[in-house]
Amino acid sequence: MGKHYLYIGIFAAMTACAPQSHQALDNIASNTASDISCKSQQLESKLYDGLKSYLIEQQAIPTADEMKAAFHSQVDKLADENSRMTGDQKTQLNSNLDQLVDSLLVEAPTGERVTDSATLLQLLSAIDVGDRSTTFRAYMQDRVRANFTALQKTVQSMSLDCNTSSSTSAVAADDMTTPSPAPNYDYNYQKQQATAAGVNAAVFGERWAFATAYQSCQTLTMEPLSSKTPNIQGITITGKHSDGIGNKRMISSLAKVDATHPYIKDVASYGESCFDVRSNPLIYDYGGKPYVTTAASSPIDLFKNGGDGTSVLGIDCSGFVFTSMAAGGLRLKSGRTLKASDALAWGSTSYVEPQNNGLTCLSKITVTPTTSLHAGDIVAVQGHVIMIDKVGADPFGIANAKTTSDCSALTSKGFDFVIAQSSPSVGAVGINHFVAKDYLPTESKMDVGLTKYAYYACLAKINNKSYTPNLGTLSVVRHKGTSDCIDTRVALAHESCIQSCSSASFAD
Image: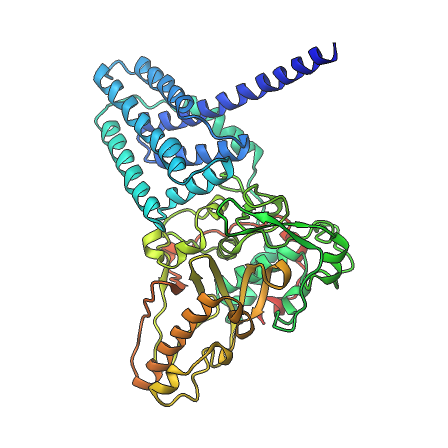
């Protein structure tokens, strides 16, 4: 008898989930169909956001056939409501939608060997923002762009009645479940004070994210990590990720992590509004991204697992860089509304050639006879991306160079700047500030690339010329700061914990 109850329970669970899945697909199709009839030029964003919401909420990959069926049903409704739609137009519209679905849900995941919803979520996010960091992604950009162009051509050829009632319920539900957060006046005050002290938005965003991650103002005044910092104890490598590169990690001893983690060990307790980091510390999580939704008001939540790394809390290098820029109110793509869900879009390699990968608000720096590296600059190689937190008076150590031979002899041992990053350093600390000259010997690609930048900065000084290094393997990029690249900042979950931080902490 017990078996029968078990079978009934399993069947009930399956059938309970199925209607939610179908309803979610119907909502995607309905919102897209609404744009087809009203021609409000939001078709792409509605489709991408709908698919991303599905992947986040359902934690499953919809089949192409299910998505096509939902679209066909909505096209049937459009035809019923619009007597002017011809049979040929209906057929063409279905064909365009089928081709687009095949590209997004069949060809793209097959080409990158996607097997889970979290990985597909990152891939669709990357396609959405224009990432071309690999040959296949460049191909998919052209493929999907052609699909959307063909679909828009068909849509523009039709004269349909605009009926928004079909998508109202889905939009209203989203607005009700994720209300717009109240303005954080402490954030605004801190940013104003930091700006007055000469701190740019990128650095302020990075420090705001840093302090929020550890729920502590104290972390901002601590000395950066160095070659003398001991390794954290209590974190164990359990295997490799599916790419064969990144390590999977788990916390094997919480007591040891709390006792040895440089940003946690001296914190006795947390305030009432704070997340208890000691009970669930953030460590380095290869491939890990913060938890987000596609809602316009979604915060970036560092304290909820995004499901794309491992079960530990923590984010990877590109997740931290995006969080920093978003917290500072800086768009990465010109004109694109800044939203939390784009934390899933760009990987480290995208920043090496930013203009090719949708990062149109970033450009490679030019070294001049008097200027080179700035705080807030982003440094990227394939596999890692960091931000510059502080620079000394002579960041590349070129003050005493007199000849080109001196320039050629430069090494990172003479560098004077501090980096901000999420990395597996000192036993998988995760988010950290690190003295560059001590960190770079552990990251050979960055060491070699930044040494070449130092060489060009040195040449600029000696020859009284300006150079824009184009190494191909490493880039130093800077936010443009233009009006089309500035937006309302993205809030961070539990940021209220650091509202009492002194302004000097962010401005130092």
